[in-house]
Amino acid sequence: YTFGINHIVRSEDWPVMPVEVVGFRLQPSGFFAGSPAIDVPPPVSKC
Image (cartoon, rainbow, N blue to C red; front, side, top):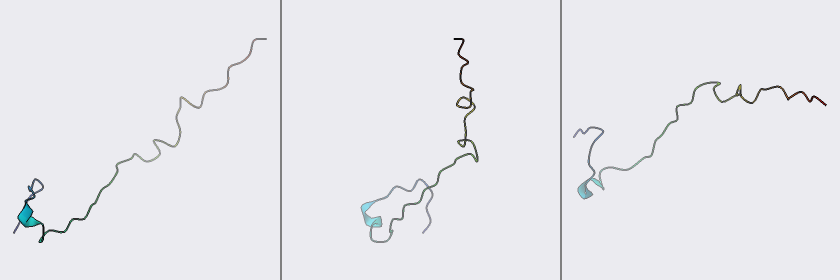
């Protein structure tokens, strides 16, 4: 018995098909380590 990703679960599938949750995240390497907008020198006071 084979099925694709779009298999529609029915009540008769329940005893045969145990469920296991799997997931993943895609995150660029080093992208969130620093921001150029935060690395701004402090303003020079003119007083």
